[in-house]
Length: 295
Image (cartoon, rainbow, N blue to C red; front, side, top):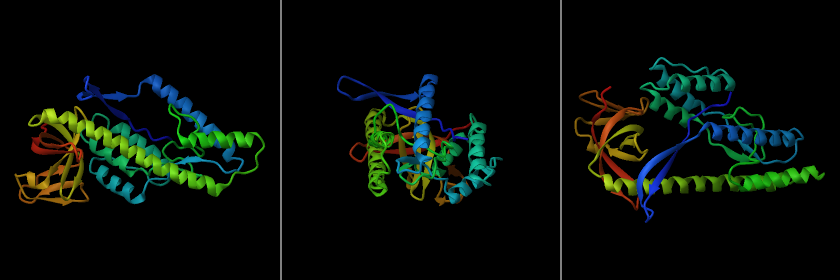
């Protein structure tokens, strides 16, 4: 019942001065997945052991997807002949997994993968256990991991406290720590993304005026975001830079639509772009569209 998204980590080859000379992707191997299963089992068992005693504990919770976002996903995938079963949380999770499996290798995979991820709620720490939707666990906590997080330490302390005969820890105190940990996790994630973006822009400074194939990763009223397939560097094509027509933003289609030509730039489309400008301080890349990828 767990929802399975493929994870790709962006890494860099560096020269002796720590400048990026190349980009590569780190994907999980079978050995990584085996260790992850052991980790999930430990986290689940510890959370269940304390949770069933109804004592104060630190949980890793993940709420159900937003209904409006699920509805938007349903509308878009229906155009490709797919359908989600949204009757219950379980049928929703099962049909999401089925959808992700069915779109593999197809032209609409980029669009649907991106939208499916965006429908998910954000996981966080809390003493109020609502379960973990994405993993399909009733009880889940961060007891162990390849790195040691502060919530792991809180879980260790609480587990030892209860094993030593402790009655019940102060829920209010631990809820405050959970909120702080969730906030710090958000800052940490942002710092990581910003550092990756910085190195990507630095790498692309040596590749201005070169052509790349990219996938439209976002659509707004002021332009489209494009992620380059070969290196995952993301930049923007501003709407005023698309010269072949006057484009307007269609929110329901996640697309820019040409008023005269009916040409569409939609989330998930593959296009050819060229790097127009790089701004290391703002960590921004500006692209121009050269055309669509013909399949």
